[in-house]
Length: 87
Image 1 (cartoon, rainbow, N blue to C red):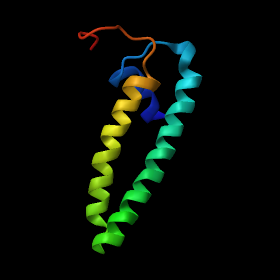
Image 2: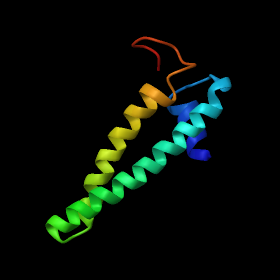
Image 3: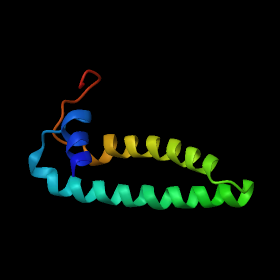
């Protein structure tokens, strides 16, 4: 819940409190997808290289970019200023 609130208010500056329920459901869905994606990537790299750590690094980088883009474009898109200077 803390991670959700920080992302909504501070990171993405979303003030659409009427959309909080929808955003929370989408947020939890993305967290679950990230977990599953991380597991798949780590297992795939483990089967190719025999080690886990590089898979964790690759999965971390991929999920960071994926999460930011989805949060920015889909989850917290409402309730914030439009245009280049929105932050």
